[in-house]
Length: 156
Image (cartoon, rainbow, N blue to C red):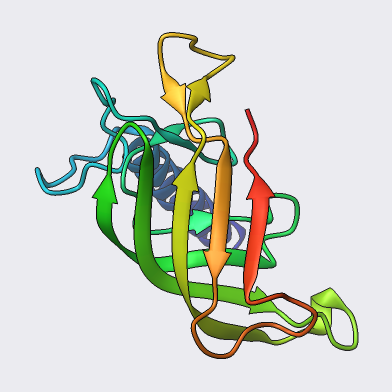
């Protein structure tokens, strides 16, 4: 009976290691993007939006605003324009109400117009311009304690 358990345990360990290797390889391999997805493409003249992991993005469909805890993010972004002066999109701001505290809070979605501007050289790559400011405008409902228009500096 003991030999049967050892064989079964060894087989399970081999299967788990094989699965881990396959998943690790798949997640480490670069993913192919369809030609229409330009979120990680390096622009030639247009500025980039730098994400929480310091990756330059062009026309991303989503963007985390609260890098530390993820309690505010932009989703379903549809870009009207993106050029050297500014960018504008419509989408949803998903915000945690943090009631009674953030870990137990509820996420709520609010329609939002997103504007980017004030392109500056990016410290990590001075040849690349990055947007320095983000403006969120809430055309309807908005999170408690938010103004109709909220302006934030973006990280470098």
